[in-house]
Amino acid sequence: MALMQTTSRTRWVVVDLETTGMSPAKGDRIVEIGAVAVEDGQITETFSSLIHPERSIPYFVQRIHGISDAMVASAPRFAQVLPQFLAFCADSPLISHNAPFDRSFLDFQSTLVTDAPLPHAHLDTLRVARLLLPKLGKHNLDALVQHFGVSLSAKDRHRALGDARATAEIWLKMEAMAASEGKSLLKGWIRRN
View 1 (spheres, rainbow, N blue to C red):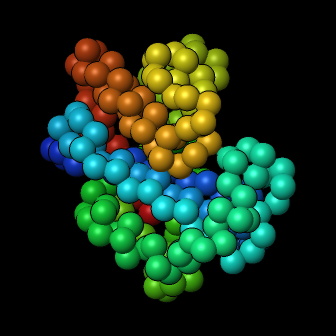
View 2: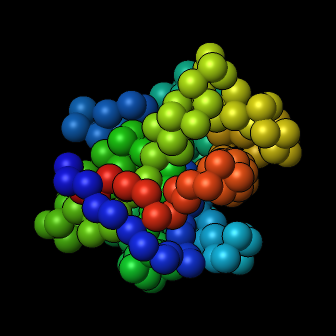
């Protein structure tokens, strides 16, 4: 992965996925994608879709995100959702919490459909949180939700759109925190795949 420096960017897309497991290379697939557009410090649009994974969702995974085989039985396939997701993202850089996980699924499944990974730059809020809050201890989404006082109901936790909204709010709070120290996350380094 190369590093790319950004300058004045006003629109970012925060994305979260729910999956059948941990490894796209071992056959796991996306079952839900949620994204929020952030423009000039505000959440302006949302995108969400269940996705038929073309395989069964293990029961222990269903217990985490609450998405069952019945819920995705009539959902569109990833190939049908990808064009809509790409249109929503346009040329905006992506933000995710634990971005390497989400990016691995997006790139793997995008490559199956288009023979190419996503072209978007991708920023990892987990990495940024570790740099900005080294004394916090844990930097998982739950710890950051609690630290920043972000509202995330139990029914929205581990659902893609709910987690994307929470990640967007955390990102905005980290950007404000960095700005108060005379820094800008938007003018910093982001990972480009």
